[in-house]
Image 1 (cartoon, helix red, strand yellow):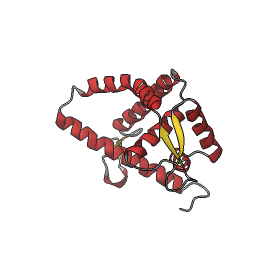
Image 2 (cartoon, rainbow, N blue to C red; image 1 turned 90 degrees about the horizontal axis):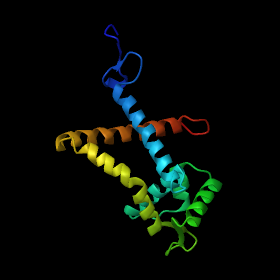
Image 3 (cartoon, helix red, strand yellow; image 1 turned 180 degrees about the horizontal axis):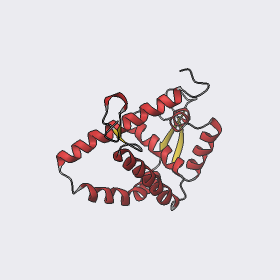
Image 4 (cartoon, helix red, strand yellow; image 1 turned 90 degrees about the vertical axis):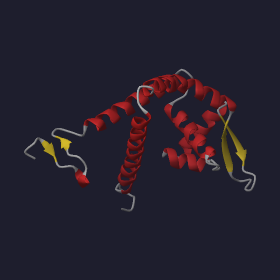
Length: 174
């Protein structure tokens, strides 16, 4: 375009010439820094990012009242069956997860977080929560509402992009 911007796909705001909108770059930087934090803080407890992601999946589904199985964990984390077994073994041996037989189907293994997992997870993420809380204190309730709506839309857009990318990979029906 004559004004140095590129037309935006699907009617959004135009992208500046030379790349994505500055907010997209900030989201990428935030993601990178969040990953660095998880690697550093988790590493102090000898936990890898995959371990922490697994605990987050278990916590999220448990909070919703869902039974968490190795198959659910495998699917959510995009792991092979052997990698999922190794992950669960690691979390079990470290005292973060227990395997229990599900009451209605004794063949089904259910994964549960232990009090140790909650305690160490809280210790790992407390500094991040404290720093983020301090940063958020400088914004009004209306501003935080706007940012919350924006971040929700960004999460939904990321999920949609992942699903689109997954659907177009070889071996997956389009």
